[in-house]
Length: 204
Image (cartoon, rainbow, N blue to C red; front, side, top):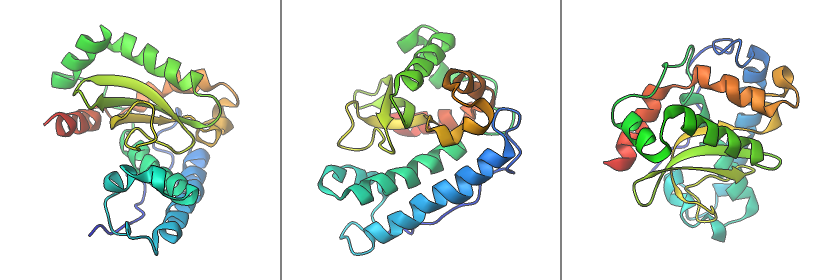
Protein backbone atom coordinates (compact mmCIF):
# COMPACT_ATOMS: atom_id res chain seq x y z
CA UNK A 1 0.00 0.00 0.00
CA UNK A 2 1.37 3.39 -0.98
CA UNK A 3 1.62 6.17 1.59
CA UNK A 4 1.17 9.56 -0.01
CA UNK A 5 3.60 12.10 1.41
CA UNK A 6 4.48 15.72 0.73
CA UNK A 7 8.24 16.10 0.44
CA UNK A 8 10.36 19.17 0.99
CA UNK A 9 12.15 20.58 -2.02
CA UNK A 10 15.42 18.69 -2.63
CA UNK A 11 17.27 22.03 -2.52
CA UNK A 12 16.86 25.52 -1.09
CA UNK A 13 14.26 27.91 -2.49
CA UNK A 14 16.99 30.10 -4.00
CA UNK A 15 19.12 27.23 -5.31
CA UNK A 16 17.88 27.51 -8.89
CA UNK A 17 18.50 31.24 -9.23
CA UNK A 18 18.83 33.08 -11.51
CA UNK A 19 16.81 30.69 -13.71
CA UNK A 20 13.93 30.40 -11.21
CA UNK A 21 13.74 32.89 -8.35
CA UNK A 22 13.29 31.97 -4.69
CA UNK A 23 9.88 33.62 -4.34
CA UNK A 24 8.48 31.66 -7.27
CA UNK A 25 9.87 28.41 -5.86
CA UNK A 26 8.45 29.03 -2.41
CA UNK A 27 4.97 29.94 -3.66
CA UNK A 28 4.99 27.16 -6.24
CA UNK A 29 6.00 24.43 -3.79
CA UNK A 30 4.45 25.55 -0.51
CA UNK A 31 1.14 26.81 -1.88
CA UNK A 32 0.39 25.41 -5.34
CA UNK A 33 1.87 21.94 -4.92
CA UNK A 34 0.71 21.63 -1.31
CA UNK A 35 -2.84 22.51 -2.38
CA UNK A 36 -2.79 19.77 -5.02
CA UNK A 37 -1.54 17.30 -2.42
CA UNK A 38 -4.16 18.25 0.18
CA UNK A 39 -6.97 18.20 -2.36
CA UNK A 40 -5.78 14.87 -3.72
CA UNK A 41 -5.96 13.32 -0.24
CA UNK A 42 -9.53 14.57 0.09
CA UNK A 43 -10.53 13.33 -3.36
CA UNK A 44 -9.02 9.85 -2.93
CA UNK A 45 -10.00 9.33 0.73
CA UNK A 46 -13.09 7.18 0.17
CA UNK A 47 -12.05 5.86 -3.24
CA UNK A 48 -11.13 2.16 -3.68
CA UNK A 49 -7.95 3.38 -5.38
CA UNK A 50 -6.75 4.95 -2.13
CA UNK A 51 -3.30 3.53 -1.36
CA UNK A 52 -2.55 2.56 -4.94
CA UNK A 53 0.55 3.98 -6.64
CA UNK A 54 -0.26 7.07 -8.68
CA UNK A 55 1.00 5.31 -11.79
CA UNK A 56 -1.69 2.67 -11.27
CA UNK A 57 -4.37 5.23 -10.53
CA UNK A 58 -3.61 7.07 -13.78
CA UNK A 59 -4.34 4.01 -15.93
CA UNK A 60 -8.09 4.38 -15.29
CA UNK A 61 -8.26 8.09 -14.43
CA UNK A 62 -10.86 8.70 -17.16
CA UNK A 63 -13.36 6.90 -14.93
CA UNK A 64 -12.69 9.12 -11.93
CA UNK A 65 -13.86 12.58 -10.89
CA UNK A 66 -12.31 15.76 -12.22
CA UNK A 67 -11.16 16.55 -8.68
CA UNK A 68 -9.21 13.30 -8.43
CA UNK A 69 -7.77 13.61 -11.93
CA UNK A 70 -6.65 17.22 -11.54
CA UNK A 71 -5.21 16.90 -8.05
CA UNK A 72 -3.55 13.53 -8.52
CA UNK A 73 -1.94 14.95 -11.63
CA UNK A 74 -0.83 18.11 -9.86
CA UNK A 75 0.62 16.08 -7.00
CA UNK A 76 2.55 13.70 -9.27
CA UNK A 77 3.66 16.24 -11.86
CA UNK A 78 5.21 18.59 -9.35
CA UNK A 79 7.06 15.77 -7.58
CA UNK A 80 8.55 14.97 -10.97
CA UNK A 81 9.33 18.61 -11.78
CA UNK A 82 11.30 19.32 -8.59
CA UNK A 83 13.47 16.26 -9.15
CA UNK A 84 14.32 16.84 -12.80
CA UNK A 85 15.93 20.13 -11.75
CA UNK A 86 19.00 20.82 -9.65
CA UNK A 87 21.36 23.74 -9.02
CA UNK A 88 23.60 24.26 -12.05
CA UNK A 89 22.01 21.29 -13.80
CA UNK A 90 24.16 18.38 -14.98
CA UNK A 91 25.47 19.84 -18.22
CA UNK A 92 24.24 17.38 -20.85
CA UNK A 93 22.77 13.91 -21.32
CA UNK A 94 25.18 11.03 -21.75
CA UNK A 95 25.30 7.28 -22.21
CA UNK A 96 22.24 5.38 -23.35
CA UNK A 97 20.01 8.44 -22.97
CA UNK A 98 22.26 10.49 -25.26
CA UNK A 99 22.29 7.69 -27.80
CA UNK A 100 18.49 7.52 -27.75
CA UNK A 101 18.15 11.29 -28.12
CA UNK A 102 20.54 11.37 -31.07
CA UNK A 103 18.81 8.40 -32.69
CA UNK A 104 15.33 9.88 -32.28
CA UNK A 105 15.86 13.60 -32.80
CA UNK A 106 19.26 13.84 -34.51
CA UNK A 107 20.91 15.86 -31.75
CA UNK A 108 20.42 17.21 -28.26
CA UNK A 109 19.80 20.67 -29.69
CA UNK A 110 17.07 19.31 -31.95
CA UNK A 111 15.49 17.56 -28.97
CA UNK A 112 15.54 20.79 -26.97
CA UNK A 113 14.01 22.70 -29.89
CA UNK A 114 11.16 20.20 -30.23
CA UNK A 115 10.58 20.24 -26.47
CA UNK A 116 10.49 24.05 -26.44
CA UNK A 117 8.04 24.01 -29.35
CA UNK A 118 5.75 21.64 -27.45
CA UNK A 119 5.88 23.92 -24.41
CA UNK A 120 5.19 27.07 -26.38
CA UNK A 121 2.31 25.54 -28.33
CA UNK A 122 0.59 24.11 -25.25
CA UNK A 123 -2.38 26.45 -25.15
CA UNK A 124 -3.03 27.90 -21.72
CA UNK A 125 -1.77 25.95 -18.73
CA UNK A 126 -0.06 22.61 -19.01
CA UNK A 127 3.17 20.67 -19.34
CA UNK A 128 5.81 19.74 -21.91
CA UNK A 129 7.21 16.21 -21.70
CA UNK A 130 9.98 13.96 -22.93
CA UNK A 131 8.65 10.43 -22.58
CA UNK A 132 9.45 6.82 -23.29
CA UNK A 133 6.53 5.65 -25.39
CA UNK A 134 4.91 2.25 -25.25
CA UNK A 135 7.17 1.26 -28.14
CA UNK A 136 10.23 1.97 -26.00
CA UNK A 137 11.22 4.98 -28.06
CA UNK A 138 11.55 8.60 -27.00
CA UNK A 139 8.84 11.10 -27.90
CA UNK A 140 7.96 14.68 -27.05
CA UNK A 141 4.43 15.68 -26.17
CA UNK A 142 2.43 18.10 -24.06
CA UNK A 143 -0.63 17.83 -21.84
CA UNK A 144 -3.17 20.40 -20.66
CA UNK A 145 -3.78 21.44 -17.07
CA UNK A 146 -2.35 18.80 -14.67
CA UNK A 147 -2.69 15.85 -17.03
CA UNK A 148 0.34 13.73 -17.82
CA UNK A 149 1.29 11.02 -20.32
CA UNK A 150 0.64 8.20 -17.83
CA UNK A 151 -3.08 8.97 -17.90
CA UNK A 152 -5.41 6.96 -20.10
CA UNK A 153 -6.78 10.32 -21.28
CA UNK A 154 -3.46 11.41 -22.83
CA UNK A 155 -3.29 11.75 -26.61
CA UNK A 156 0.27 10.40 -26.51
CA UNK A 157 0.87 7.94 -23.69
CA UNK A 158 4.17 6.90 -22.15
CA UNK A 159 6.45 7.19 -19.15
CA UNK A 160 7.61 10.74 -18.36
CA UNK A 161 11.36 11.17 -17.97
CA UNK A 162 11.50 14.98 -18.28
CA UNK A 163 8.60 17.35 -17.64
CA UNK A 164 8.48 21.13 -17.57
CA UNK A 165 5.66 23.07 -15.93
CA UNK A 166 4.40 25.76 -18.31
CA UNK A 167 1.65 27.06 -16.06
CA UNK A 168 2.20 30.80 -15.59
CA UNK A 169 2.72 30.38 -11.85
CA UNK A 170 5.94 28.50 -12.67
CA UNK A 171 7.62 31.45 -14.36
CA UNK A 172 5.55 34.63 -14.38
CA UNK A 173 7.27 36.62 -11.62
CA UNK A 174 10.58 36.57 -13.48
CA UNK A 175 9.64 36.03 -17.12
CA UNK A 176 6.16 37.62 -17.19
CA UNK A 177 4.45 36.41 -20.38
CA UNK A 178 7.70 35.27 -22.04
CA UNK A 179 7.27 31.52 -21.85
CA UNK A 180 9.89 30.91 -24.58
CA UNK A 181 12.53 32.70 -22.48
CA UNK A 182 11.69 30.52 -19.49
CA UNK A 183 11.95 27.37 -21.60
CA UNK A 184 15.31 28.48 -22.99
CA UNK A 185 16.76 29.24 -19.56
CA UNK A 186 15.32 26.08 -17.99
CA UNK A 187 17.90 23.81 -19.62
CA UNK A 188 20.56 25.33 -17.37
CA UNK A 189 19.03 23.56 -14.35
CA UNK A 190 17.90 20.26 -15.87
CA UNK A 191 19.18 17.28 -13.87
CA UNK A 192 20.17 15.05 -16.78
CA UNK A 193 21.59 12.44 -14.40
CA UNK A 194 18.13 11.94 -12.88
CA UNK A 195 16.52 11.93 -16.34
CA UNK A 196 18.96 9.18 -17.34
CA UNK A 197 17.90 7.15 -14.29
CA UNK A 198 14.25 7.48 -15.28
CA UNK A 199 15.11 6.50 -18.85
CA UNK A 200 16.94 3.39 -17.67
CA UNK A 201 13.99 2.33 -15.50
CA UNK A 202 11.49 2.96 -18.29
CA UNK A 203 13.47 0.88 -20.79
CA UNK A 204 14.59 -1.94 -18.48
